[in-house]
Image (cartoon, rainbow, N blue to C red; front, top):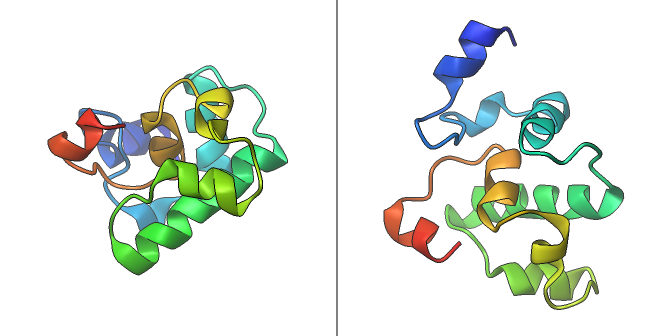
Length: 104
């Protein structure tokens, strides 16, 4: 994806407009831009779980549930990512809306 495509593929809040455009290379690029230089296996578990949940339910899961499922500590999202918005963005999911972003 070139710079022009990248700038038009995201909304003004940095969320990918089309989840089908996502791939692991793009995820790594978004993560680097957000200050996460290396996505660990724990990061990937969270990201892929978010994508799977979104494909099924078209909504964000409870982040603590993801931590529970993978037997991570209760606040794993806060330890892996700068904010709860980051995994959603890095996973290439669309803008969840203002109300949901308030709770992220």
